[in-house]
Image: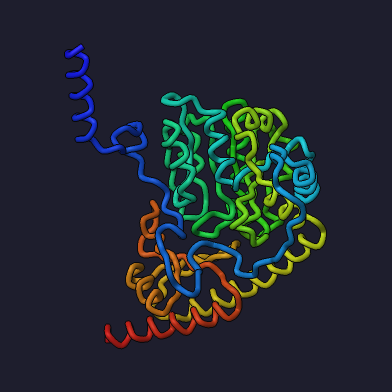
Length: 374
């Protein structure tokens, strides 16, 4: 009896000397999490750092919420299928496109055996989701930050290839013929995942028509960007029914809350789609005007041509530029840590008043820098 008490006492003493975080898996302790725009920056009156749509729509909720929601709400699935031009059996709705990324890796990659291939600079969650699921990441840099390095991609043996088009953060469209080349190369070997989170800003570039030719093509979509519903967390995966059925085996029982389903269905109704298209037209015009303005600033060394609701700029000192705008209550994002990029800031397109305020702040900053350097 006394021996047992001694052992328990020792364990209790040792546990007090350890941090609770030490109980986490080693993988979790070592993982560097994704730094979202909202988590890495706070404050500010003008938020132009998260690629959100400042032209926010308004919707109404109806009913009570005491019952569990449908796992895949039919009204939402049918509406998105009609909008995207696919069959309902080719659609999965999830908590943002991020959950789609996670599900694809969990469903198709054997931990510690398989890998994914990504093309930096690109969206950071592909790598984070892979690492959190003990899946290796092959990084094949884009050529000139705008085209795929096909030879480099073909030299990898992944289960999933992620291609972001329009690409975040550069805004470039990946040439369709290159996407087709990747699809041809990996038939029967891997899924090719094309992330079209920003496709509404360049709809003619969508690869949805290729779904009928390539059963290993997967497309990610979202309501966060053009539809102005980032706070809703509602995304979609478009793929062959066999792929969708595999993802359904691992998705949470109730991924889509009833309020989310109601608002998503309204956003995908004809009036909601028309509102989105008007918003896109406004943002595209504001983006063109901002790009023209930025090209005229002496302190801006490069303006990437964009097909989304953001613009990437190369400046002399990205951190100083971000800090100067913070002093003006304006948030933009430093993307210099992205592989393949240096001294760049990403500017989300806001509403007309926000863009005017941004232009004046940038003009003041670069003019002041010019005087100092002179």
